[in-house]
Image (tube, rainbow, N blue to C red; front, side):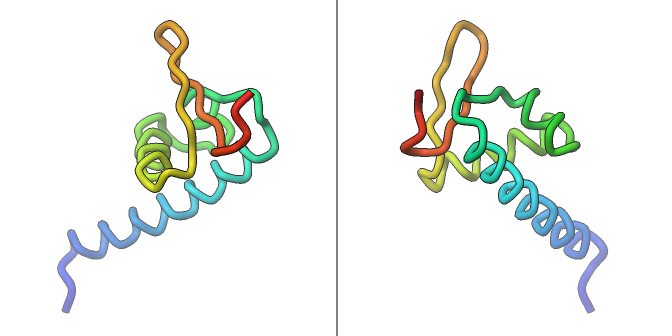
Length: 81
């Protein structure tokens, strides 16, 4: 039998997967670049969850990140404006 922590971890992994797909759709539609705050509001998740999803996308090489001042703008690869 799986432990409670493993079940919670599996649920969280599933949630992140859904958030990643939602963020990819949003970034595909909006090529101006979005901050973590904007993406968390659009996906209705916490900034931490959005940041984890973005870190996974960046690690997979699917997004570009541009730092402007203290903001990070996120773009899908090939859509950087």
